[in-house]
Image (cartoon, rainbow, N blue to C red; front, top):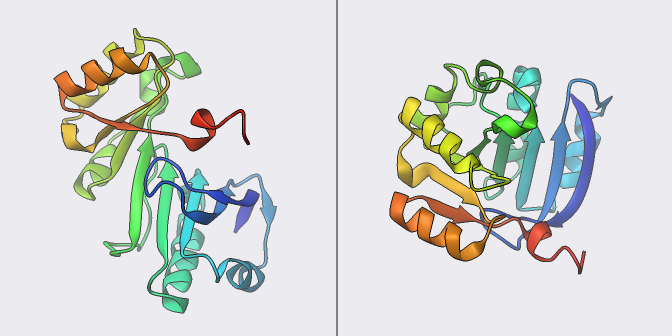
Length: 189
C-alpha cells in the first residue's frame, strides 16, 4: 500500500478532539510494510484514512480488515472524494465514510468531481462534507445535493464562512455544520 504521509494529531469534523493516527493514502506515495504499519498504529483507537484510498481499493480494504481484526474497538474514518468505491469492505460497524466533494473553485468540472459511485456512499449513510470559499459556493452545494438526492441530514457544511450567515443558511436548509479544528485553532497549532 502506498502512502503519501502519516501523522498523529487530534481528529476534526467528526468525533472532534480524539488523538488519532492519520494516513494519507495515494498511489504515488511510498510503499510501506503492512506489518510495521499495523504495529505502529495499534495503540490508536481512532484511525483516519484520507486522500484517494480506493485507488488502491483491495489493499486498503484488506488493511482495514486487519486493523479491525487486531482491535474491534478501533474506529476508522475514511475521507475520500466519492469517485471510487471500496472493494470487499461491506458494512463494517466501525468504518465511517466521509465524502468531501470538491467544489468548482478547485478547478475540476462537474463530471470529474461526481459520478455514479456517489449512490454507494449515500446508501452507506456517508457524511457529505462541503467546503465553501464564498457564499456563491452555496448554490453549487444545493445543486449537487439536489441532483444526487443526497439526504439533507447527511450534508455537512464546513465552518469557513461568516458564522452567523452560515448558521442561518444551514438552519434554513436543515444542513449540518462541521468544524475543522486546524481552522479554528490555527494560531495555536
